[in-house]
Amino acid sequence: MSPVAAVTVPQVLAARAAAEPGHVAVSQGMGSLDLGTWQARTRAIAAGLRAAGVRPGDRVGLLYGAQDWIAYVVAYTGVLAAGAVAVPLSTRNAAAELGYMLEHSGATAVLHGPSATLPGVPMRLVWDPAAVADLPDADPVPGPRPGDPAQILYTSGTTGRPKGVAAAHANLAHGMRLHPPLRPLAHSRQFLHAFPIGTNAAQTMLFNAVYAHAGMLVTARFVPDRFARLIETHAVGSVFVVPAMAIELLRSDALRRHDTTSVQLLGSTAAVLPPAVAAGLASALPGATIVNYYTSTEAAPAQSSVVFDPRRPAALGKVVAGGALRVTDEHGRACPAGVTGEVWLRSAGAARSYHGDPDATGQVFRDGWTRMGDLGYLDADGYLYLVDRESDVIKSGADKVSTVAVEAALHEHPDIIEAAVFGLPDPVLGMAPAAALVATRELRLGEVRRFLADRVAGHGQPSRIVLVEELPRNAGGKVVKHRLRALFDQPDERGDR
Image (tube, rainbow, N blue to C red; front, side, top):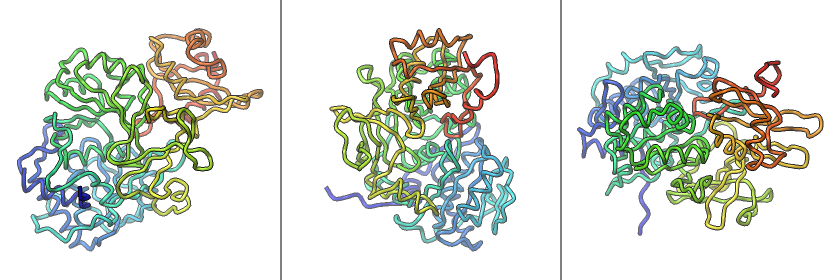
């Protein structure tokens, strides 16, 4: 079979809009966007940017709020069609973060939504919603080539300042083809999500809206009952969440209060889905396939995926979409089955890199492979299991503690809703495990340790716990653990148990 020619997202959008102009690609609230309108607005924005002096390769910031998805997607594809580089941003970011991203990316122009407040960074060109809406219809401008730069997307920054991950057009459109198209999510009329703009998960949803059979249904804010009601009202076939959303759906019992029998696929991404949560989803949605996706902003579009199977509940699957997966030791040699090492993913398409940071690029991106920053192992059948983030492994005395494994065990407790495990300084062991818990009632340390006694080795059991109302998370849904460590620096009757 001959290889599929590389394409760009603007090419795919133009071809599909010509074939299916009335297909509703995006719906939010009372608004909707069909492909014909999407393509017309894309061409107008691209021509307007060129006329305003934006040249191919120029970086353009896109600052939109969660309620502005329709405006965001047309601005995004308009920037790409102009040959410029899109820098997705979110109004959820603080002004200092936005200023850093705009300056670091070298953006000289910004398109923004009505709820945006621009940071004090000089921009040559700033278009508000009225300026974008006033752009006249236009003919296509010469589009980018697959190898041209297309996007700089900033990482979530759980352990430090966000890094700008640069991707070419061929990377974003990997797996898409014009003739004949292969439409994913063919079992669905619509897919539903609530991912914030500016995250890798949100970008995946945008590309689904361009290429997939199903149209995107998006809600600005995740509220479990509203989310489940949207499933019922629109007979949604595919649902995408992060683990925190899945936990809230189960905790609220919203999936059982609404008719969710239309759901055939529930996909979880951005973080590890605890096995107990996956089992809960399988019970609440008996007609759905529960899939756990594993990737990163750096590795995309490479990912592993696995359908939840009670026989291997903690597995993160095998690599898909023509990519590759390996686990290596510190010398780069492949680890045998069952031996823990560093996890690497490789995409069959164009690799990504860090914008303006060759040293970090050399550490993470090597010969088409992406270092995931995780420790894990492969079983005899090639399924991936995560042990921990490299930065989260707790070295307690002579032992190493997997926070992923301890968190999974804590999620089995009937009164624990969420759990985050991390290391705290210990005068004897160096580091000792601690846990922040969201629970339905007061819990004492002794009770938690007794529950874990036959689930977790003694050195992995928390030496201290604290009860919190909620876990701090970044825009991508990942727990920011360094904020939790500070709780143990403050005397509190709920902690140090």
